[in-house]
Image (cartoon, rainbow, N blue to C red):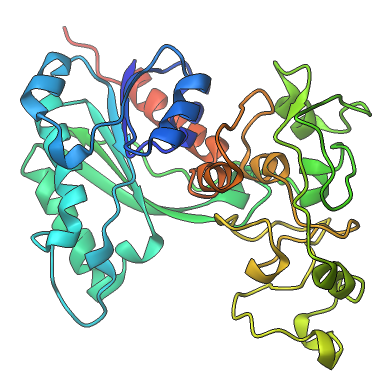
Length: 355
């Protein structure tokens, strides 16, 4: 079961599919810092950093034709969000989608998985959704769509992703809706070493045993903790955090500590027995959202964010802090990707036997 991962980022989709026994043979990620981290964690995969708009499709992908089970990826489609304008797939801002479709056309995989923001399914009364389905239908694919809710699959985070799942011929499965597992913030990160602002070594030891099945799963294959260094907050931020309690909002701050931040959840703490909000690419500051720990006066580390995204501890993020935050924040949660991989495996096992 071979896979091509486009717009791969650090490899959240890849990680989930590999966990189900798929072999990712090729990935394209143009950001060299992120691609380096992808390659470090997936050494057997060919990682291409060529800008996909400049890739010679026949030269690169023809050798994979009819040899690939899944082509997957999340091409940016900015034009789809133009409220009130039916710009369509010919809009130049959607050319990345065209590149994804072109790879599917050349490779002719049995399945494709395209993930994106949820409003791609509903914008303009489903106009863009219908255009995408029609485009792949012309290539011979039966397509189903849905919105995956990460917390419904055991990811300790509320995150929504739209999915187009297509198969050549007839698609004999449904988009997964969840597995009933629930993982809270404290379930996910409660065993990691406590740190103060600015603390944390490059490599750290586990100080306590895993306390639940999620933590055991995250630790599998890892003998140490990486990427667990706390951001050094300013004195003003630390003074403000003294007023931030589990159930307060920014409106509860003293007047001298009120800020102009417009981000939802700013200067509030993660709820230990709830889900984290969507992990973004700036989770190192309290003014960017609900990223402050329940009981420690600091924001989450890259490792804590990775746990909330369901990346295992053996997955190591490289590069500077900004790059690492991009790697984590832009990724598809591996557990969510694994659910899609399970669905495709089921479809393969239910394939009609030729007589």
